[in-house]
Length: 443
Ligand SMILES: *Cc1c(COP(=O)(O)O)cnc(C)c1O
Image 1: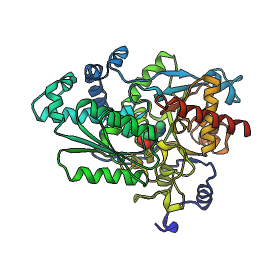
Image 2: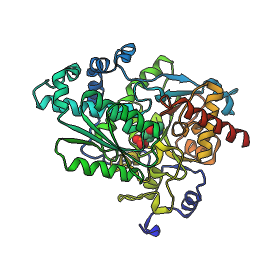
Image 3: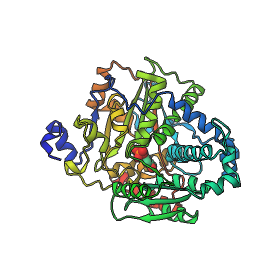
Image 4: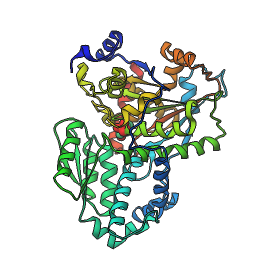
């Protein structure tokens, strides 16, 4: 792609190229733009309903889920200590609160990918079971755990390409249902994730290239086999809807915490972004409930700001981080994506408030700060959005956003979405924490 044909202001382009942390505000927020006609707002409810019908099935497959009656959800935790540490208005604005949406601790998969990944695999299994007259539409899905269903699914395969966590989530669920499962891993993927999958009987294929290459390999494999379902992270609606289904539960959690969301009580949500499926789906779901009173911001590594680049280019054709000379090299393995989702980026054009980029050192510093203040352990990718509200309230760009949209923050709720970490082996976690502390003390 020719740089001159990308519609970037020079100043933004040079900041991105220099890997300077950047806070980009989306001028097209609220514009009337059309969605892909394959996506309907009612589909969020269909996904929520499917997950409800899966509760008995999930308890059968994973007995540890009996505790939550088969619900895969995470806590909303107040971050008073972290806020006190980072928020300069903490002592003057008592009605402003920070929370963590703890998806790093989602059961079974230990990352936000449990939402989209489990939903897609279950939807695929449901469809095959209906086609083979094992169940009827809208039935309780517990039958999918039967021996008969397992025998049926063993004739099919599920494939996916991933930087790690999506492979983990798809692999665990597909293997549990009895599918023959193949996960194509990019060069960024951590060894322990591959090992964990192999132990469950998943075939792991390692690639020397990046995320796009792993996805491409999976897609190719699936095309040659009509009984293979390919989970396409770059354009899957089933994944997207699984993430969107999170919004209703969060709305209930906010209510339980007596947090109102309206003009005087705005809701700000900060989410790490890789290809865009998880944060995009969550944003789509939240916008459907809270409309203009929820403001969603994505966090991306300085070397991999694929959603920022795509949206800021104003192009319909795809623009990648490689097109502006970035290398897509980051410690945030879950966010090491050079090209934003073809499904999600057009939808984000009118829904997303902005994107900020984060250096790898800041990821580690954030990782240390939330451990030191709240005793919560995250993986580097999941720590990307921790300082979102500081950027919003303390930078010129953030102030301009608040002024332009006539928003007062004194009674705001800020949600930091933590996206992964609870499955990281303790040895690896200790290394993360040690490095995080070093970076923190140096700064
Ligand atoms: C996948 C992932 C994300 C981002 O999700 P995308 O759908 O790729 O945008 C963020 N954090 C972690 C830990 C992840 O695994």
